[in-house]
Each structure stands twice: as structure tokens, then as C-alpha cells.
Length: 474
Image 1 (cartoon, one colour):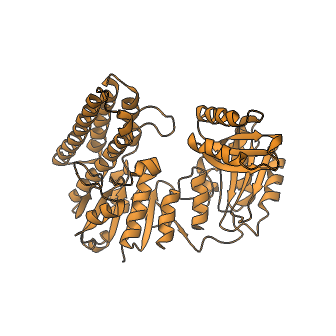
Image 2: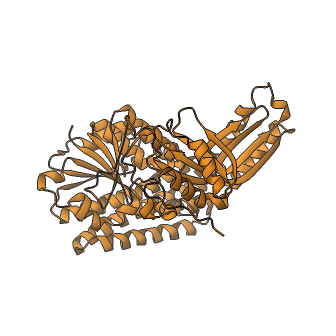
Image 3: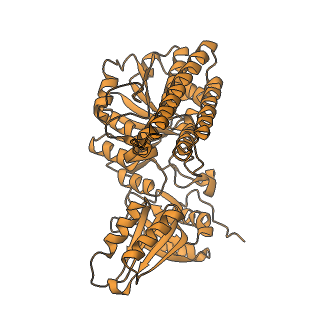
């Protein structure tokens, strides 16, 4: 096949009129507009309003419904979200008829969702029914509203620009069937002529697997990857509001960053592990197995080829990115651990049960340290569970930061040695460091207040062509 499957994130979707002039049309001839499939996320901030804020945890419709017995809180939140949706498409759509159609679409979906949740509450008032057993379904229902809205509005926008766009709704709205993901995709794409139609596909798909249960907020990338694999796409493309570059430009400065250009799926996995979200690891796995190369591009610089992620990887001996995140060093010390099996399994099971993300781990004869990303409440619960099993052990949880130097093949670069020297010269204490045999990542554990400075320092050492020597904060 000679088509591409392309995903647009929520922040970029909020600038939809600009995308018409760059990504969707951008001076293309009529025939060049097609042979592309676009998978779209909800407009920026909408999923936060429907579920909960991804970073702050501020409750949205779902969180309020789950905790509000009176029903007033979630209904108010649903009304506010509907108003926000209408305000967004009112700014995007310039024709009154299109605005009216979009208003009617939002009204139908939101009122349908409201009726469904009210019915569920009424059922819950009887002792034989448990709302808790349906909460995952509620989360699925609400999450699909945002993607359906953005796909519908984008279709109207493109049709107004004389593009034969087609709204492809995977959300299963008022659909009595419960197909698998592959069946849902096959049914939706059947009969579409890619040479003459431009499918605008919802990033959420209702299916028997339950995408939210498995991937939570990463479902749109999983849908995107499976669609690319299923249709045999020539290339899968993710459009972001920035290039995939050597460091966060907000930390090291735009003038000092370097576009990666080419890298491996191995590196993409490391970035996902550190919360960089180049692509969800499960989505990367689907593309890798289907032998579909992935490209990450700047949505508003369509002529730039961006960064290609594929089996060949990047240039050997080159640091491709320096990044980092806050972690909790969860240390289990037990002198009786030596020669006894099971301690590691117990800790791992507890951390998994409390949904703590394990970024990295280290162990020796009597100590196991997991570097975690998660809430302090969950960490405390995991600590209590492990102490219940091993009451003589000592557990400490310390806030730290992890800085990673990443590349497709770092065997020719003395990252550990040079990194330690650079951090020492900058006056940054390193509490721990690790380097795997695959040589795709080297990790440095430091104090949280030194995170930004450490990224600047290591970026200056390993990406010297455009980096500026860092200055130690007073």
C-alpha cells in the first residue's frame, strides 16, 4: 500500500485551522491530499475535563461520578465540558451551518451520556446492582466523547475547504455489537476509497478488549498503530507541536537542541519509560511487529522529514537525547535476604498491585531499590504491604530525580565516565548511576533540585555542537 496513517495529538488539534494550511492541504495538489488516514485525539484539555486532569489529578466528569452520590457534581461537570466543546468548535468553524451541526452533535452525545449515567445511578440504588462493576465501562464511554467531537469537527472543517473528508467513528456510539479491535477497524475502513477520500478517525475505539482497561490514556496511539498495521501502511506518522529533539528546549534552550533525525524503537521504549511519550510502548510493539516504520514530525513544519524510528536505529556512538524525571527511591533492606528467594517477587507484586510505575531498579545481596513514578499514597500502601510480609525489613522512600543519557548505540561513548565527570565539575552530587549491557541508556540519580541543571550539564557535554556551557544556580 502507498498510504500513510497519521496521528494528531490534542494540543495540535486545538490549532486545527493552522493544520489546514500546513498538514491537511499545505499547497498540495488535489490527488496528494488523499492516500492518508488521520487518527485524531480530543481537542486539548477535553479528556482532562471528561476523566481527570492527567497531571494534577483534578476531577473531571468520571472522577466526580465515581465519588459523588448526589449526582449534581458530575452533571455540572458534564454541562461545563459540553459548553467548552462548543466554545472550541465555535472558534474553529467559520460557517454558521457547520457550527449548528457541531452544536447538535455535542448535544446528542452529551445528553446521551447524561441519560446513561443517570440510569446507572438509578440501578445502583437497588441492592442487587453494583455501579463499581461498571465504572470501567463508564470511563470508556466518556473518553470516546472527546475524540468523536474532534473528528466530527475536523471533518466539517475540511469539507468546507472542498476536501472529501469522511468521519470514521470507532467509538461504538449506540452500537449493540462488541467486536474486537481488529474487527472494529476492518468494519470502519470497509468501502473507503483512500485515493479519493480522507478518513478522519476517532482516536478511541470501543472494542471487546477494553482499551482503557489495558492502556488508559494511551489508547489513541494503540488505535493508530493497529490501524497502520492492519491496513499495511507505508509509514506511520505522529504529528506533534515540536520536533523530537536532544533535550527539552524549555530547559536547555531552543537554540541548543538538535533534532534526533533517526533513531530506533529501542530508544522510543526508553523515552516512553521516562514519560516522554514519543509513542506508547504497546503501540511501538505493534508497528515493530508489522514492520511499519514510525516517523515523528512537527505538525506545523510539514516539509521537514522529522525523526524516523525504525529497526536500523540512529548513528552509532551518538547521544540522541538527555532527559529526566522525578522519582521515588523505594529501598527495601533486609539482612536475611541473602540466599533466600522471594523478596524481589514480593516487592514487585506489591508495587504492581498499587499501580506504581517502575522506571528502573537496582539490587545487591541484601537491598532492592526500585525507582518509582507514582503517588505517595500508593507508595505508602505498598510499603505497608511489604512490611506485613517481611516485618524485620527496613523500607525507605526518598524523593530523587533520574537523568538519562540515551542513544541507539552508546558503546563507543564513555557516557558513564564522562557523565560523572561533568556532573562533578558542575557541583552536582550523584547518589547512584547505572549502565546496561545494551548501551542504549545511562542513568544518574541526583537530588530533585538539581534535575534541570543536570540535564543542561549533560546535554552540553554530549551534544556539544550547539550546546552552551551550563551555569550553576546560586
